[in-house]
Image (tube, rainbow, N blue to C red; front, side, top):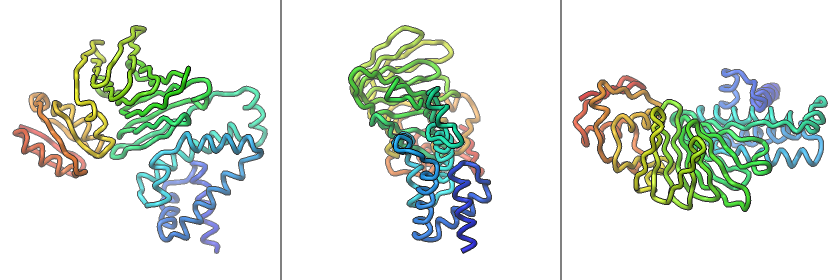
Length: 331
């Protein structure tokens, strides 16, 4: 009984985002032991949520918050045990705790927050080696690729429909009359009304690309609009500010969200950057020349990184050496 009490205290620390790493490990060893323990964990979560709720309006706000930050990682911990995924869920829970204090109110915070109506932000993060599914409050679905973050305001779907992306995201935007959906990147904004498209905008990549599958979007670059049609890809060279428009097999742009690796034309340098994030490894090219090699690749069976490297060696003349998470490619 005393052990269960101590575990419950650790669960509360976890929900509040202040648990120590060694205690987090202990907590989830307990959760993973049986279905009864997982049920107890879910009950403690419900009680923790209820302890910060003071009225029906706050209850509605909390339910809205839960919908806003629903991600794949937030669901999986209740079903299967994965250390990385638990860590992601803990971050989301910590955000929930902070926002609950802001909009739910304890120690007089709610009244002050209500009168000032502060703008706060939710940040959904996907670690390397993972991907996440985010369902926004307007019904829009966003898949986030490895190493990506999505940021949006608590006023999303009321005052605006604006999100900020760093990394790669596949969007299926819900149409809403009179409410334009905007994706902000560090290079340009994507303005949409209801459509399906992929955006790759990592800070450390030399380009930003948008590929349109359905509908229409407008790229807003330094005040100049650029219209796109389905089947087109627009790539911005961040350094030069030049765009390249190409006709592509647009469905390939969301292959990563479907556990596929599929490119009709890609350089080895571009591919290894994607693979490094997707598999959480460090792939190093021994020369610029080997990185400039272009080829076509199609893998559809959730291959391991070792299997991907083997396939690459069959496509192009390269030598691969692996040392743990470090992979070296040379001619």
